[in-house]
Length: 231
Image 1: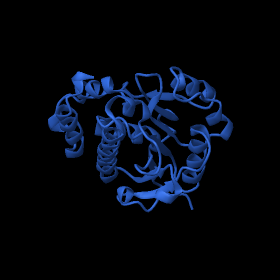
Image 2: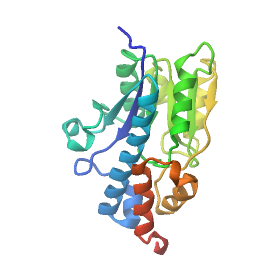
Image 3: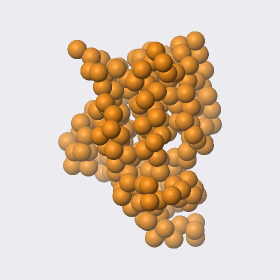
């Protein structure tokens, strides 16, 4: 039976199991890059948890490594293995699995810790009643990708595979694949972190920090303490 709830799934890699934040690590070192990933994932999870307390949604971690599914780092939510292959293949797999039991799926990266609760809540509302709202939701990233994507249908594997990932036109190419399948509601643009310069940008995008979750403020405090301006 399909749940009345939607699913929100955060894509993560596990420190010690896979290389992660490789571009960032080239500048600030692997240890600090892994620390950012841990803090950022916790911040995104705090936003998801807050929305899950308000809306009919179930949170998940989509973990890149099957052996890391029971890792304590991911014990806050249920876990799902991303599967094998490139990112398109893994997105298609998670979309298929969660669409079997949920009315819609929202995909999140773990690299935009400044994500406002209101943005995610808006995405849920837009997807909860597709008869009245646009069928898809995208949160564009300023590098051309996306930090959030929501769909009430299980997209075909070919749709996911026809998108070039980690490219300047990733978001637009995904939208092109959706043409004719429904309208798209766009959230405001946010920065997701791949480089040391973007660490400074997310502080600016965070705005009024009193409205942030404690885990989000922890990320910003960590960035300020690292003296990244020297890079």
